[in-house]
Image (cartoon, rainbow, N blue to C red; front, side, top):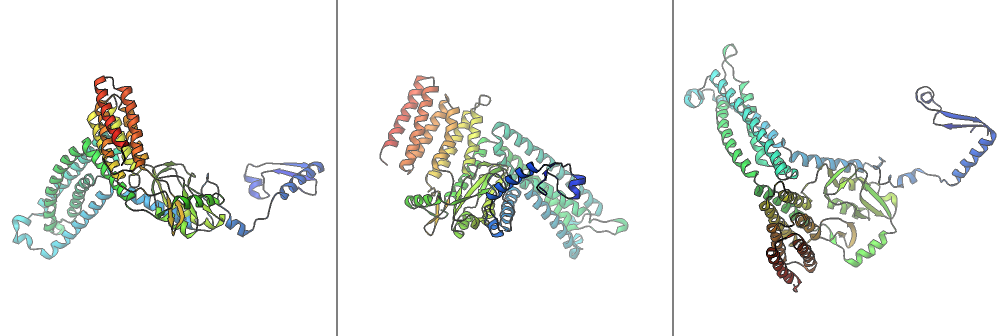
Length: 521
C-alpha cells in the first residue's frame, strides 16, 4: 500500500529479475476504500503476531515430522546422517559379491610383482634347476597365455552357474534366501581365485622379454603361474561340490537358521541400560505427558536395518531427556516418518541431538538379519509357504522349516528379553521397541498353520514343535502363548482334516499337550 490509495497485490518483487525474466504478475488498484480495508487486515494480523529474536529462533523446534530436519547452526544432523551412511555402505560392501574377489585380484597382482622382483637376485636359478625353472621366453609366454585364457573362461562358467543357482533358488524357495548365496564366502572365494589367477598371468606376461628387447624370463613367477593353475583346478572341483550341496533345502535352511541364531545371541546376550520397574516407569511416563515432544524424522525411505541402542541411551542421558522409539528394526519407513520422539522440558535444548539420534537408525532398501531375528524367521516361513503351495507340494521341506523354526524359538525362550524401558542411574532414559517371544512365535507358526490345513504331516510337526517348547523352562506368560497356539491349531485340525482317524490322533496329541501346559510349572 502506498499513500493509503494505491494497493498492489501479487508475486512480483521490485527487482530486474521479477520485472524482466520471471513470469510474475501483480494487480494494482487505485482506490482509497480498498486500501483502507487492506490496512485493517494488516493491523489485525499484526495484533496476533509476536516478535521473534535470534535466541527465539535458535531454541525453536525443528520442522514437523513430515519433513526433513532443517539445517541449522548445529552440525550434529550432518554427522549423524554421515555415520548412518558409513554403516550402510560398509554393510553393503561386506555382503557384496565383488568385495572378496576384488581383494583377491589385488593380492594376486601384488604377488606377481613380488615374484618378478624376486627373480632378479636368483637369475641363475634356471641353470641350476632347468627342469623346474628352465623355460624359454616363448614357452613361458605360451603357457601363461593358456593359463590366463582357461581361467577367465572358467570364471565365466562359475559366474553363469551362480546366476542359474540364484534363479533356481528364487523360484524353488523364495527370493529372500538369495542374500545367503550372495554373502557365501565360498562362492566369492572361488570367483576371486579364477579372476585373480587371470590377473596374475597378465602381470607376469608383460614382463617377459625376448629378441631385440633382451631376454628376461621371471622363472619364479612363471612357476607360480603353473602352481596357481593347479590351485584353480582344485577350486573348480570344490565349487561343483559346494554348489551342489548349497542348493539343497537343508543347507539353505541351516544357513538362514544359523544367521538368525547369531542375531538372537547378539540381541539377547546382554541388556543395554537397566530395566525400569513398573512404578518408576509409570511415574516417568506420566511426567513425560507434559513435556515437549520433538520428532526425529527419517532421512530416507526404506527398512530399518540397525539401531544403535547405546547412542540412544547416551543422548538421552546427556540431555536429561527421554527418547521414545516409534519404529522398530525391520519396519518400513518413508522419508520424513517419525523414527523416535525426544521428550524434553524445553524444546530448544535437544536440537543438536536430533541428528545423532537419526544417525543411530540405519535404513536401507532391504531388511537384514543382524538385529532382526524376525526377518530370519520370515525367510524360513516363506520357504515353508512355497513348499506348501499346490505347484510344489513339498511337505518334507515344510516339516524341515518347522524344525528349524523350533530351534530358533527354543533359543529365544531360554534368553532373557530385556524390558523396553531402559534406565541409567535409576532414571528412565529410553523407551525401546523390539521383538518379544510372542511376536516371534506368531511370525513363525501362524501362516504355516493357516496354509498347512489338511496336511497331516505339517500339522503333526507343529504339535511336536509346541511340545518341544513346552519342555523348556518357560514362564506362565509363555505357557499361555503356547496354549493360544494349541487352541488355534485344534480349530484348524477340526476344520481341515477330513479323515476321522487322523483327526482323532492329532486331537489326542493336543489333549496331552494341553494337560502338560496347564499343569503348575
